[in-house]
Image (cartoon, rainbow, N blue to C red):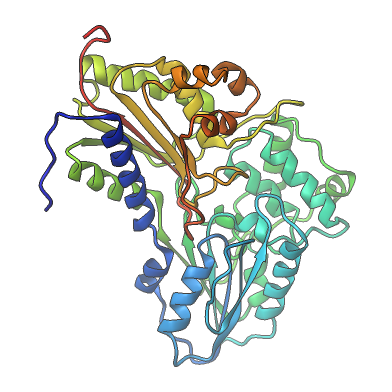
Amino acid sequence: MSERPPPEGWTDGRARAALRKIFDAAVASADPGAAVLRHLPDKPRGRCVVVGAGKGSVAMAAALDKAWGDVDLGGVVVTRHGQRASAGRIEVLEAAHPTPDAMSEQAARRMLAAVRGLTADDLVIALMSGGGSSLMVLPASGMTLADKQAVNRSLLSSGADIVEMNAVRKHLSRIKGGRLALAAAPARVVTLAVSDIPGDDPAAIASGPTIADPGTLADVHDILARYHIDLPPAAAAALAAGGETPKVLSAENTVRVVVAPTLALAAAAQAASDEGLTPLILGDAIEGESRELGIVMAGIARSVRRHGLPVQPPAVLLSGGETTVTIGKGQAGRGGRNTEFLLGFAIAAAGEPDVFALAADSDGIDGTEDAAGAIVTPDTLARARAQKLDPRQHLVAHDSYSLFAGIGDLVHTGPTGTNVNDIRAILITRGGRPTE
């Protein structure tokens, strides 16, 4: 075990470096290629067809192709534009995220074609991970891709959580919610998934194309009403037609979550310990409005610094999950849920000494921007105002990315090839009253 650094001497630079090491350790632990090899099923008597969607699908496909060189194997997986890599005998397609494009539809059609006509001796391995919902779309009968894109945009700005959004997507699709597995019968389907879903429900990962769907049309109508989501006429007609998703699939099918946020947070905690910090994991499935969670976390950090509760500093508070950003008309600036969380945190922390924070998406992309997230320091607000950036105005406008870009505190990783949702680390370097 590495020697713990001394507790004193927490400079700005050291705090930033520690936060980045903690985040990088969490991402490294979620390597989907290494994880998939620990969960491979028995080799089939016949063919193996590999299908997959999401930001971790290519790494998983490449590892599987290499490990099973003696198996008659092929297939197709889809990842985000700009993340193409070789997966051997398995074809790799690229499509758009978070709003689907024509390649998303082509990828879905190719996957359905790949699994048709199989026998009971054949095996389908489905490699699913975060982002799969938009990368693989096949609109319900009567709907166009433009209709599906409109639905997706409405969902993303509604404030609905990822499970609720995916419930709607499943019922407006010809491939999600178990329909891909239905098309593969009588072949056995093994799903290997990287979870980006609070609670690790495999039916929600990439909208569960190979998993029987527990949700119902009634659930979908409740979600649409709760968040005041308007659907295009063709989408409303598709729901009115009453097409339910499959509720039961073959008992031979199995699913294994190979990477989950809990494992990433455990790795982050170990990295924090190596830096001389006491880690406290608050949970891997924390949800809610991003800016409001920022306020809550700032209150906890203040309690740690001033009272040593719920942990004595130097310490780091770790959490995962996926928050939401509800955008009103005319409010859309630049930013994602992590930078919005951090801006809410910074305003609520109000320059509390000795308190630092990093929040970033493990896939390297926060929302639709080119950054994974950002870092907050005790002087974040002061430095923003020195650049004539008003933190509260940027928060109201959902323009957190621009503020952190203006002070040079964005975190850039590039695409990581995995996705176990957001990683938040709040560092409190020492205790004491603000006047000390």
